Length: 180
Length: 180
Image 1 (cartoon, helix red, strand yellow):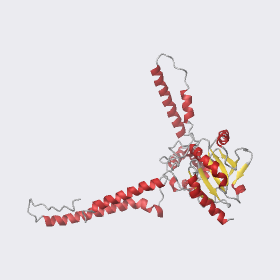
Image 2 (spheres, rainbow over the protein chains, first blue to last red):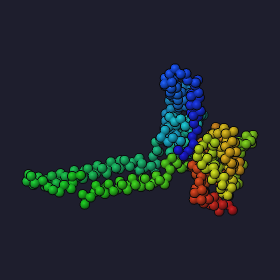
Image 3 (cartoon, rainbow over the protein chains, first blue to last red):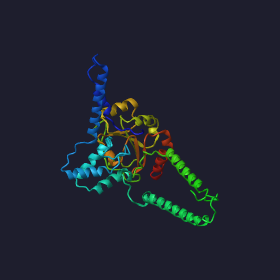
């Protein structure tokens, strides 16, 4: 990866591995236990990083926060929302969004604030504007083009069916150019 | 003619995918162009790394262009970039301002002691709050800011000798042409 993102997990992993020395009793089971401990620790770490205890006033505020952060892209790991991401920048941005909510700013204002700094890319849904028209309506255009091809092919075939009906049985036309 | 249509369709797709492959070799998919280019840099007041009691602000730097280089001791790619800054930083014709991003001050100082310090001065942004205003989403990133405090150019990722000759020097030359 090109960009550095901070990760404290390696330090925690070292702590997790700093267990008392193994007895001779059963090395395998001790190893297994170590593995289990590590799994639990890592799961805990991931969990605590993903959900930070933000002091929400009520449930509605929490729902609004979750809805808003799940529409915003984390710039570090670009296929994650800032609601999901463990990246440190995502945590900073979550806190930022939360603080702006406390200041009474609307969802739209918060999004504009982030777009001004990180471009439209920060929005998971691209906005409908002149340079995204093809993005929004391209699939529709392709669908229409496909429909046009189907209509033309069917018309041509039914016309050909009218003519081939007169061909005696066993003498199927060799030219099947419209069969695709 | 219509028998050749599928072939044309196929060749069109081959061309499209070929273009996609070529495009991706020329562009970094993770790079998000900054919307702040040719806009005033955000106002900031940040403490000096060496002396946190003294601060540097955007206003105090007006009048001369500078290159703001975001780095951190935890950032691997910054180590790749560093020799280039050491070798060519002083010949750029603009002041090199280090921006220590989300870093422990002692780690940063040790890092600069170990690798050398190419910066005229270094500001520290430990919470990363100002970095959000700059739209920073990783390190290294570099901003060329002109005498009026406008961001004129941004480079995401390590600065290489190639980046300096192809992008940075022309951008700096354009600044110097405006205000001799």
